[in-house]
Image (cartoon, rainbow, N blue to C red; front, side, top):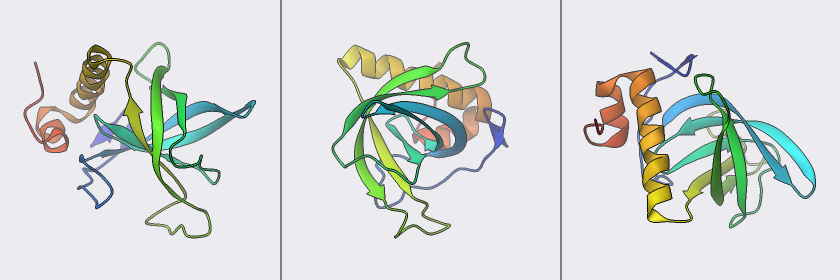
Length: 141
């Protein structure tokens, strides 16, 4: 099975996640104190993503980032908030250094539009059955 051209499998919920996530590898770009960084998002759900980085932002930091999704003509720009981090010193192969990001929205309409876009991408790449497993329900038509 692939997601955006990358091998994947469904990852079950962990104690830190509200939603099941699909593993991915997408380049993510963001600005941090006048410097631009390019790291990789390693999984995604309707509500957030994990960015693998040796330089996680502080918990509570809100920032704008761009996910490079091969099927889209331009990067998917999202606002997120760091809700947890794993430092390089405490990371393991199974739990790499990085930060858990919760998507943030200016309005309920923006939330619904972004979640629908992520949901469509999951269905396109994984198929309706696996997308339903990640979403916990049948995908919207």
